[in-house]
Image (cartoon, rainbow, N blue to C red; front, side, top):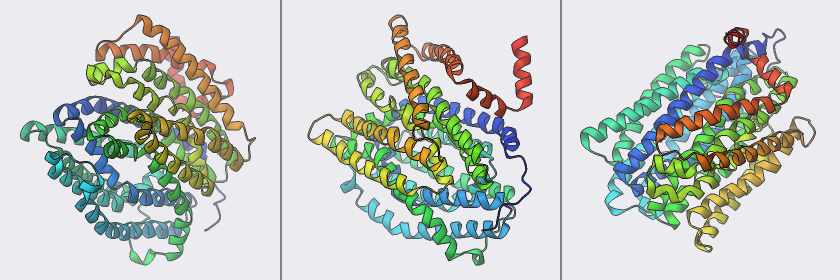
Amino acid sequence: MSEPIEEKPNTTAQFKKQLPRNMFLQVLSFIINIGIGIWLVPYLVGHLGRAAYGLIPIAGMMTQYVSLISHNISASVQRFLTIALQRNDVEDANRIFNTAFFSYLALGLIQVPVFVVIIYYANMIFSIPEELYRDTIILLICSAISFLLNLVCSVFAVPVYANNRLDILRSIDIGRMVVRLAGIVFLFVSLGPRLRYVGYVDLSVTVILCGVQVGIGKQLSPILKLAIHYYDWHKVRELMGMGWWLFVNQVGVLLFVRTDVWICNRFISPEAAGDYAAILQWSNLIREAGGLIGVAIAPMIVIYYARSEMENLIRLSKLSVRLFTFVLAIPISLLCVFSPSILNVWLGSSFVGLWPLMVIMVCHLGINVGVSPLFSAKTALNKVRWPGFVTLLAGVINLFLAIYFVKYLNWGIYGVAFAGALVLTLKNALFMPIYGAIILRQRWHAFLKSYLAGSIFLVGLIALELVISRYVRPVSLIHLAMLFLTVGAIEFVLAWLILPRQDRRTIGDLIPAGFRTMAARIAKE
């Protein structure tokens, strides 16, 4: 790989220029996702029933094991292609791009007979009510085809990441969510609610997005040409050398976040899986909230590494962990304290008794999502072996512990949630912060101090909100939204004041001058 170019543009200045666009679309995508999720989940549960709704994430599980391979090839491709593009190495960039594309194509062809076997024996692998069997098979087929198309087309999204144009990715996400919602509602209203229609819509949306990804990828990086002669076996070994350990890591992640609904379906009941999947939306919501900042800073961590700007990389990693844990403490505390009211307003009184499940699912995410910037750092530095091994081991422990809690202690869906929360927190509260400090050559407790401060802040917010909950009991969605906006805004200001002065100064420096001037003018008025 060629040496870094000597004349470098100001990376931080480029980051500051692009950051507002990225963050605005990140926030907008997140808000739209919240709105659609809050409305669509009870809509699907009400029209399809709990058992049928629980089969939707089950269908996604079928493709998860192979998506691990593609995800980690993508992470590896993103790293190497970003470095090649940042170093203006056109030849190397084309070899990486074409090696990834044709590897994806071969991987997709290999998976076809595997999917056929899984779909044929679906009734043995999953617990499917007889009346839903045909629709479930159609849903599984649509899910498999959608995955194969996404797999092949995903390489065209890498140039978007490599150019730090995350605003484009989020715009595509917004379009996908809106079209999917409109398609499901249209088919349900015109033809009646059927599980298979969800599969039809997902497949149609995938076909549209593939065309969009290909067009944008070519426009952003015209130097990348699709040609078989660029395929390089040496690049396969280079990409897979890193990708293998990322794959091992993601197998562990799969055992954490993708087996819980299956365990509920297989060892409890389809209805229990539907209940669990519905409440799981709030855990996913917090993870996506963390992604607002995480996705925005991940390309910059790789770019800083590519340009040998290690001081900026370390500074951004430390700031991100502290900021994550402080900001996430606000929605986590609100979801924990007001979980009965949320479930009553959102899904109805029959779901209120599941509020402890919701608390178990979200209370630990301050730490487990808070340390996620360190995942980007380990990928940028290609220090992925030990995290992969530890995550896989923890995932296996989680799987067996969850089944033990369900089958032998009769804890039901609460046992599944508790196993995941316990094992994941032990891993991310101890191993990842210490390992991140080691690979970045910092003191071993550098990141421990960051998330501990955020955890203490979370406990304080919960205590404050418990007092508020004694006097305020939301009884409608509007009332709940007003309460969250008001309390959340106050707590956000409090978090800003508690953050160290250096962190506030650093965040301010990342904001473009025009935005700072406008904010100062508004404050004076």
